[in-house]
Amino acid sequence: MPKKDIIAVDIDEVLYPFLKEFVADHNLKFKTNLKVENFSTYEFEDSLGINRRKSIQRIYDFSSKTDQINPEPIKDSKDAILKIAKFYDLVIITSRHPQYQDITVKWLNRHFKNVFKSVHLIGYHKIIQNPVYKSDICLAIGAKHIIDDSLDNILDCAKKGINGILFGDYPWNQGNLNKFKNITRLKKWTDVLNYFGIN
Figure 1 (cartoon, rainbow, N blue to C red):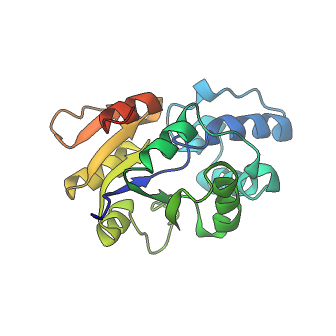
Figure 2 (cartoon, helix red, strand yellow; figure 1 turned 90 degrees about the vertical axis):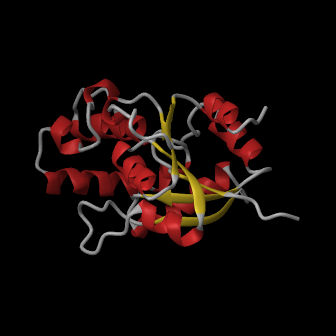
């Protein structure tokens, strides 16, 4: 049986509605009136009006909550992932900090049990002392494609020959992709299925 191609998949804003959950929790905890629409960048300190250190601490505090396993996956992601897994080997590569490995795996097992061959939490490269990039993991494991909502991650992977699917039409991932023939923006999971020719 021929070996399946590998697709790397991000978690937050691709499978898991992180910003929606974070905003709801932040409003409850800090009595704020934030909306998802307030976040034009994924540098949360810009929208929260606090410094980066405090912003990261609030993200970490939220990420460590045990109820993180409860939220439902992003629309159509579960059905699409299960279909894609029949034809490709899927792996998770996320910028979540490695300390959240257990809670992340619990959520994946709850909603995508036995679907992903491996899970890599590499941390956010801008705040990690010895950063690892998603492109590094993709090259190491031989991933041919990556599905991610971060323009920076997709551009880095594309420059190294990895086909990038820029997921979602989010304020933080806008940009001109014309000069990259191996990047495709896909707004929803049904588009991803069409891209891979899966019904």
